[in-house]
Image (cartoon, rainbow, N blue to C red; front, side, top):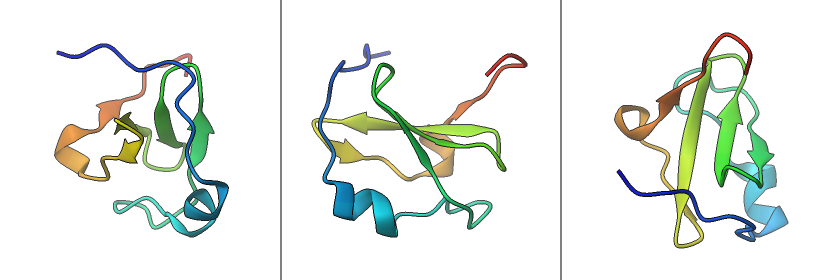
Length: 66
């Protein structure tokens, strides 16, 4: 398993148009973890080399406190 890239910059215009493929809801950018978070689906999509990986099978399930 790879470690998250910290402080990855994602184009703000890209963040405006991306939605969660599971819930079709908005995503929140977590810069520290290099993830796009879907609160509705309780999933976090990784960002690798500056590219969001929007595949549900690659997403991390969010824990209780997240």
